[in-house]
Image 1 (cartoon, rainbow, N blue to C red):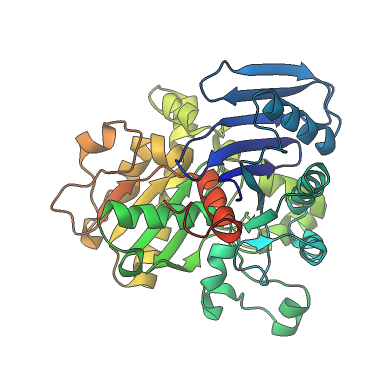
Image 2: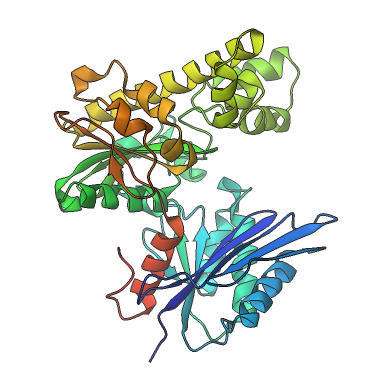
Length: 408
């Protein structure tokens, strides 16, 4: 009989995050992180359940060495890749294009398609591929499942996914709106419905995934009908270092007037913009701390905050129009879950749309899903902690396990 555990791997360009989840009882026997892969000094942090956390500082030259180190740490706790309790390995893959609409067992054809999508996800898919290929070599006996960030958004109607550019050019180069953070949006929209005591098919939710990368989605009856990110994760909300929505002619202007290259503009918009570009800090906690002071530092932080919130409000209003009826607005991810002033500011002035937060509820901290709107509010405002690892594990196990476990 196949085991009930799933190892979830999130392989980035210079890091590997991992969690081992047991879908039978919801436990997490181990979790960890390898970071600064390929640098002079790398770090591995491994946390087994019920045991002391272990840390190693040593060179990790590539993803193969990183995943071998992860496998060794798991084996030390009796949780190795050869464990009969391990059912599968689930991989986060950022871009699945239009083909991958569901979790998919990985074979050579799937690998080839993920590689074909590298031009539209050059920062993410190559690292995802490296993790998959290494895991397949280390554990050829285990099913390997790809869970795609873009999959949840493939239900968007064509009029929401299309850009208004020449159709032949768009189709030839796969230029369209794909959306990202899909596993988070799927999980949070479903958990929000549960918080309201309703079936997801009956609930319309605006999900606001606010972290260093941020995105919004409009979810009607459990299906995404619009989302803020597009061809890449650059479009949409103001983020930690990304600009979000911008007049595309800014690119032409900077090339012609400032003499900047395409690569330089790419770095500007993705790594030197957003909160960082506006005030010099990409951490919302630091922005809020500075706002409490006085002088130029406080003024630039206040401007960054106001730009951030203004964009957020515009998307909330737009998605109210897209959905027609909104049952809940759910805040999630690092900023969404922890920055009460952001939640308050985002809904201030939107009482006409049925939105309000209760100051006391909003200020209170809690670990689980909770409502922060007053009982009389027409639209529920919720804080719903995301759990992308559980979502990936659940989708993986539903595909390769007995099909009954893993969806909380």
